[in-house]
Image (cartoon, rainbow, N blue to C red; front, side, top):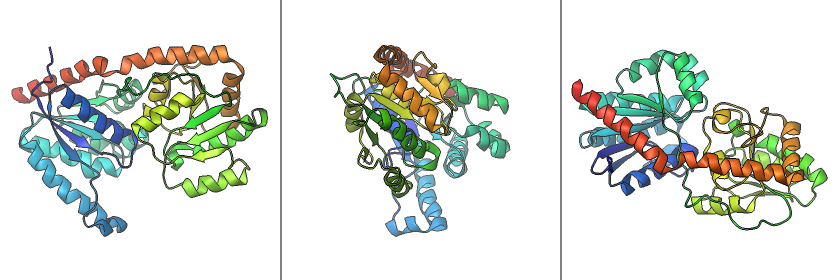
Length: 363
């Protein structure tokens, strides 16, 4: 039975561009809910600035986005059964998440908070009191991983797990790959994702595989700096900065690569790792945040310490030198990805919505 059919859902969150993990999950969730015959009202937290020049003035741009957002939020709350709020750390919480919870409370609409920030521990250490005050007015808190469930538990807040969703119709293994090693980093070009360590690790990979290639699939404020580093390391002719890719382009790129590298310094449940698993690509990732809740070292991925270029390079070289290990990790990864399909996750989300509506009626 489709318990989502006919349900009116207000989905609050960012949308691409930029194509970050939370924006991609918001767009995908809207598509899946509509496919399940739910009536979805989208409230975008990162709508374009109008007029555009306001986006270049720090203080003005915050209010230029906030005021239309609050108006849209208020109107949407008046015509939905439940609000699903995609929430993150820092100012994103204070400017967009907390107001959505209070608007829902004022309008008598249950709000399910879907917290997704990989830096939750540091954020809650600073702002735990304010977060708790808002969450007491929410109908429920869901997180994508056991990692975030533990973090919130340490601050006295209970969260249920509803994981990220991967689209296996897009992300799946392809045919034979080219013989020369092709490595991929599919993270934004920001300090948090430490693409610089991946570049330094690639130098060591090239020493044994001179024909290897590295693609950095993303964009961000560090692009100029990373291009300069690649040139300084003497590897710029082997590194391709692809820029931001859409879902079809990313899926095709994954089917062409031999190893996916996740060099992040902090993480929750990275879509890039999940998509690599679904595509049958062995993963080398830093052992941070929610990553060890998603994959198991030596079983479905190889995990290395953050910021350690040598350990990262040795893990990649090990996979390139041991095809049997690469195949075993890829097969285990594809099995793991089956747990994160809409068929598995959709009913859990429907249960969360139903519980939120029941609790709201009792109040």
